[in-house]
Length: 57
Image (cartoon, rainbow, N blue to C red; front, side, top):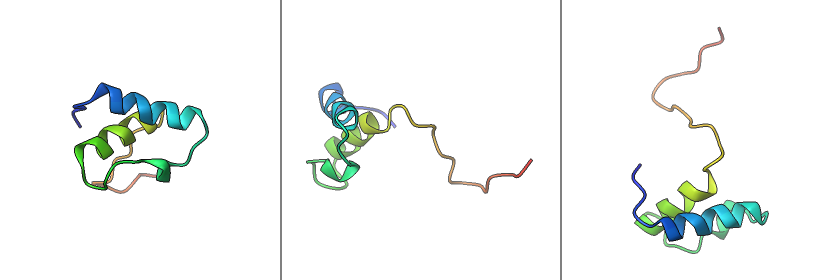
């Protein structure tokens, strides 16, 4: 996903570092700012692949 606002992304990153829950996202669900905030919030998490099941091998 492309980040449009690095400022909003930084807000999400700072919120996570401050121990806030992801529900602290102040932007409307579905908006670009919300997506950018969540991108910052989850910057240090492994990307999840949802198009196929995980293998047990």
